[in-house]
Length: 395
Image 1: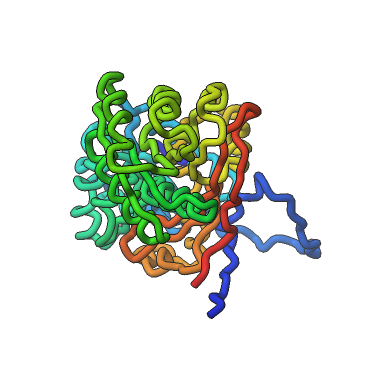
Image 2 (image 1 turned 60 degrees about the horizontal axis):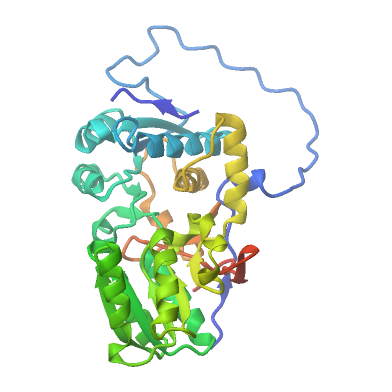
């Protein structure tokens, strides 16, 4: 149980299941083992033999892992959802070798990290926010404790920090490359002002050029109706385009699509990002019919959500799967991690990757999780998958 802390033909590699957590989704068989009498249990230590000291009691049989998430404040619901999912993963895997303690980053991420290190934790799962990762990373690095964070801000990755968050750049790259296979070559983009929009612009340019296409128009908007309309009107100024990426959520996409159809993009393929993955209302808008976006496969997450709802009485936040998969990753590596030793950081660089609720993933040399993504199409009957996510990675 998670505890509340006080504070050429490339060779395809098949993924190894990350612990036993995926047994909630996969049927399996158990080998019959002859029954033998269990060995006698050793006598419990006397009070004099039990180590006494500050912080958590000494644990000689389990690895100490800190879960750093907001448990109070404005992001408390998301943090609690991640913590609940991590708890579920421990239950599903047995978690015999792992002890997870939760620390509230809303009280100060640096303070939480300091407390976690004092308690003897050898691996950090979290934090959630990029600014919290920046506060935690130096302390963790000084103690040779790796940080597997839930942020998607690539600027905080590397030098001991690994990111499990869903990368907009990977989503854009996947959907653009898919569009290229369907004949699109001239791309346009509608980008919100701010960091996300800038990163999305760079990702679109890189993906289009790397796949043999080009970006003919990039327009920014400030999310006001007038600004969005002006940006759409400027899309055609640089020439025709046959695909347009709307790098924003469903609300903006629903506003933009009809205007695109009326102002020169009648036949353009509409593309979206991973932000659309949780937007069930997109399928109810006729203007979105046929639009594509890339994200992780949702079938296993839906099963996790059902189990989560049954146990906790409410649906999880979508990011809860990151907590679940982080624990699966930890449990798998725990088999090659001697209790009391530092976490085997090299295990995170496994080129074969890991399997989780959100599909296959592996950490690149930059520390960012490379994910196996599917391409989905929006239609009147709902959202369907038009290009399946690969089951593994090529070395």
